[in-house]
Image: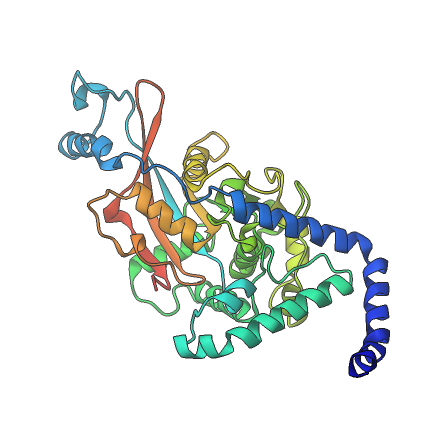
Length: 377
């Protein structure tokens, strides 16, 4: 009798839910597709699996020594038996980690103590799942979990980064920081720089919001180039892009709320100043992070990137893996062990040399790594 009463009580709600699902059938099917894709990545993705490559210092040690002694590196300067035929090429890279995401808010302690996080985990997960259901029922092609957007806290972090850049170093008297900030701001007296970004929404939001003054000043003359090789290294659903190939990114509900508060008109910038021409959808299931990191290195030294200063919007595991792979193995820099904080910025010099076989080798100059904003947690 009680069961029948419950069924009768919930029948109107069930009918309403079914009607809404049928009305928003395209969204439901899209989300089901994303769920299945997410399960496939969880089961078969090899993103974190690769054989540890050779220590880059084995290649660069002798060449750097010759360069320091002669100030000019040629094949002859390196010795007649040298396997290298080109001088060391250099690019200055700025890694900018995204602000906190909704996935981080649900599954990571972040700024919270471990006890606070554990006590709030189940309520937070329920909240996230209910909100995901709301997005489906309301027909919104958005998600809390897949390609998770910047959270409300993440949006505040993005705004703080923007304010730091606007104040030209946040009051810092360090000349080096001031020079870095001038370049990040794209000031006329600073060297030319190019902005690259991951195809995941939280990274794009961070670059769009954090560098809003630079982008507004340059209007449609400057675009953020989406580079697929920067997609985060993980099998989790939050690292899968929700944006179809070559389509423009759509503002999340949090982006829209921030736009209404005049923090930044995210959708306008996504439409006008984000170049999606290289975006081909999601990373292949059979790829791995090492392949993408090498693709990135090759890309920044290619003819497609003329600038010597590159600003990169991306992710903590990808950045940490990059330092673990391309810093000399004997170097114990903190970047190998700890993540860059949300919206943190770190600068370094990336070195390239080409073997006679045509195979390029890359290394991060350990003396060049400098924290511009935030640091490592």
